[in-house]
Length: 509
Image (tube, rainbow, N blue to C red; front, side):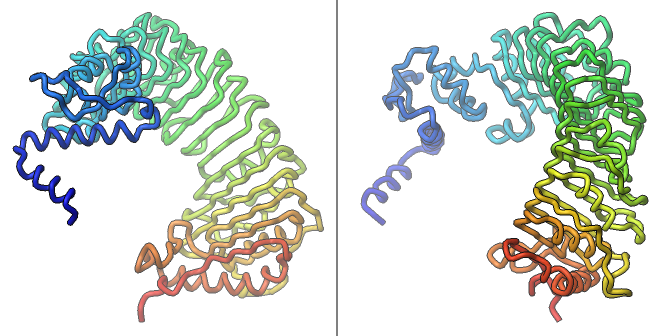
C-alpha cells in the first residue's frame, strides 16, 4: 500500500463516525457534480456557508444566484435533495426546485421506507407556493399515504404547472376542481394512474394540454369525449385498461392529434376516430369495430388482436393507403391471408407475429406472400411464427413438391428475419419464394428457436434457457430443411444466418 493511501486510511480511522458520514456525503456530491457535462466552468472553492462558519470540502462557486439556481434545477431530484442537506445555499435553492419526483424508489434510497408519507409531506409543504413545473407523484397504493392525498394535490396543482404524473388509488375520486383556470391554461402533460376521474362539460378548456395518459382510470366514454372536446391542442392520447369505456369516440376537433394508443380493454366494442391528422396508432386487445374514416395521414400502425393478419390484408389498404410501417400480432388466426389486387404502395417495414396461440394446423404460412406481393416498396420483413408444438404438415412428411408463384421480382426488399422457423412445408415455401423473387435481398436470418429462448453465448451463461425436447427436435429438422431447400437458392450477395441450438441447449445425457 502506498504512503499516500496509508495516510488517507489513518485519517479516515481517526474521524468520528458522524463526521465520517458527513464527509462521505459531501465527497459523493462533489464527485457527482464534477461528472456533470454542464459543470466544467465552475471554480472549486471552500463553502463558508456551514452552520459553524467552518470551511467544508463541498464545492460551490462565485456565480450569481440565478445562474446557480438554474444549474441546481438541472440536477436529478435525488442529487438536488442531497445537496440541500449539506449547505444553506443548496437548501435555499432546493426550496425553489420546480421539478419533483416523489416515489418509493427515489425517496427510500436516502430515507427509511416507513417514513415514505412523512418525506412526501415534508417536501411538498416546503415547496408550497413556489410554482411547481413538473410533479411525478407515485404512491404505489401505499395505505399510509391515503389521508394526505388531497392536501398533496392542492400543492401540486398550482397555476403554471406543466407536467403532472399521478399514480393514486383505484377508488380515489380525483377532484376535477383542482383543474382551475391557471392550471388548465398551463398544463401540457397529464398522466393519471389508478383512480376515478369524472370530467364534466363545466370543466372548461385545457388549452395547452398536448399529452394525456389514462391507465386503470374509471371513466366512461361520454366523460372521456367531454374531456377530449375541451383539449383541442392534444397531440398524444394513451388509454390503458379504462374498462368502463365501451364506445370510444374521438371528435374531429382534435386537429393536432397524431398518436393514439388503446391497450387492454375487455369491454370496448367500437373505436370511432374522426381526428384527421392521426399518423400513428397502437391497438392491443380484443377485436373491435374500427371506424377511422379515410386516415390518409396514417403512417404507422401496430395492432395486436385475434385474426388481425387476415383483417389487415383485406381492409387496411383501402383506408390507410399511405402506411409506411405496419406491425400486426395475433395468437389466433383461422383464415389465411387473401390474395387481393389492393396494394400497400408506401409500406416499407412489415412485422407479422403469429405465435404460441391457437393457430390452426391448416393455417397456410405461404399465404403471407400476399403482403409481399402487395408491398412493392417493402424493405424489411420480420416474421415471428414461434410455436411450442409444431403441428403443421412437415416438408418431410409427404410430397416434396413446393408451391411457387409466377415469377415476380421484388426490387426493394433487403432484410428478412423469421423467428421460430420450422420444417412446416408452407413456411419453407414462403422462404423459398422470398429468396427467388427478392432480387435486392441482402440479409436473410432464420432462427430455429423461439426469440426468448435464443442462446446467449458461452461468455454470459454456463447453461442455456431450458428448452423442451420437442422444440429441439423440430429445430434440428428445420436446419435440415434449410440446408436441403433454401441454402442453395440464396444468392452470393446475400448474407444467410441460420441460428440453431448450441451444444449447451441439449440436456445432459
